[in-house]
Length: 420
Image 1 (tube, rainbow, N blue to C red):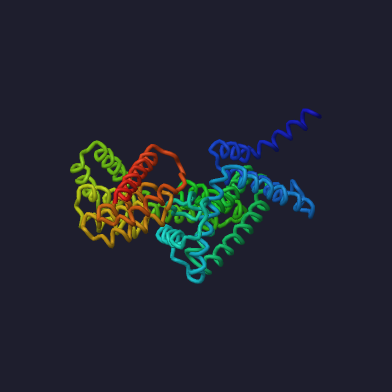
Image 2 (image 1 turned 90 degrees about the vertical axis):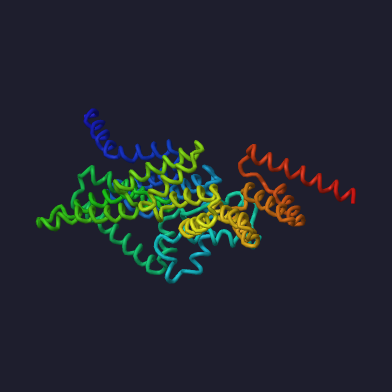
């Protein structure tokens, strides 16, 4: 009798293996979002399958325990990462505030966010912590929030309909195919992914899209299990194919671009080895595959600027900024204008680059050297003082050398003033 009960317990626990493996793998890869997501999905499935009764006090205890685990994960594990997300949400709220009705457009978050971040730091009302947290950012680290920012009120409506349909789909699937272990695991993984999307950019990664669609397919097959019509049973397969094609098209997931990606890797290797002409030629030969690709535009801008092909470099860098604005792209554009003796534009874009990510010593030092090269000593001194007061995010020999150079510069300036 005892042996049979133990066997039954083992069989019941084995059904939830995917949850335990999910938690272990998430902890191993230090993914708080998925670790908490799998814990949550385990509890939710226990409710859905009636293992825990949906009574008032059970719900309250689970809600309190879940909130405690979530808060611990946010504020006691990888705290800087949590603060970084909070800062991103703060900047993103301004984008939503100005575009709440229609949104900024699907896929436009990465082209807009950095400009709002630059405006925030330009106003000067920020903390030292926020300064250190700033980085080149292209995701809201909450897929639903980003979708709403991009689509406005329509996005809120679509998400509401989506989650309502998913809830009904899961309930009906469980009713139709309650004993299916595959269905149980699919529901668990599905809930974990949906939860993780609240804190990271899950749906922007093709591998998670594939798993997400696979889970919906399993749910749909269980939903239609009792249907006899062949067409009805084929709906999940048709939906999977359509959604996967859309995802593949979004991310250019095709064989042609795979081989072209290998050529980009070759371009980087040639450039690092000093073969700039060969690197440039190979890059331009693949332009038809990568005209609007971020990595291609970055490489093209960099190589043309290094080769002093200033007019072409200007066009390439502006196109890069249009698709993926960053502090480094603006700093490169400023350098190009400096070489073209367009000093007003050079200063404007150096300042833009600094405001985008104000904790970068290299860009600030480039602005300092620029001011010295055009004889603006007052601005040079002011820039030097700002750099020396700047808190260090990640110590490095480069930063130490910049500080030594600036201290030496200030000492020389003090000597000149003393002599005069």
